[in-house]
Length: 272
Image (cartoon, rainbow, N blue to C red; front, side, top):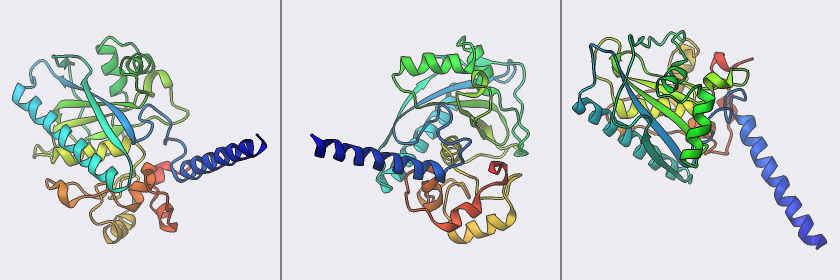
């Protein structure tokens, strides 16, 4: 009995050590904070379409977006497998068979000043109440607490993720999501599967590796040397040449081999 207790105590300590080491590696204000808990096991994806009264989605356009979502998920599963991580997706529409109509769709500009309450507004329009209440009901409906929302907007803009951080209002922001525009803000075609995969990774803790309001050109240049094909550095129409490299896999909790250089890439908006 004493040996068994000692054995289980050691296992428990090893388990705590593992989670401490992984959690320490992540942006501690965001990773494992909201509804997009961990990108492994079965993940529940919800999606919806939003449009304005004068610019609705066509069935063909919706099919294109859903095909891109499927391609992105298949690519993520392959990448997870390469890191010996089980991953699958259950994908369902938030509101069956209809788009949500809103007066105006604000464009994403990549400035870091975009509205971040889309999920809260969408869950209200879908009659779920606030974001936290929606999460409680949906997680019970799907028997899965690892859940996020993809919002397909019939508009042009820079797509972006909306993540929950400690200190934010749970009622409004706990259910995490991303808004995916049909085209870039200049009207050009977007490599949708890669962009969807990129934004999904953001919800689970990944950092941008290209120059942004929170990432310097110096770090961008170094990422081009060390992680030239990482999907957090660049996106493109050919998913087969893109990958989840060491740094992004570490941020996902897939790669346990921390390298000293990883922290150097931490974006400024994560620093306290």
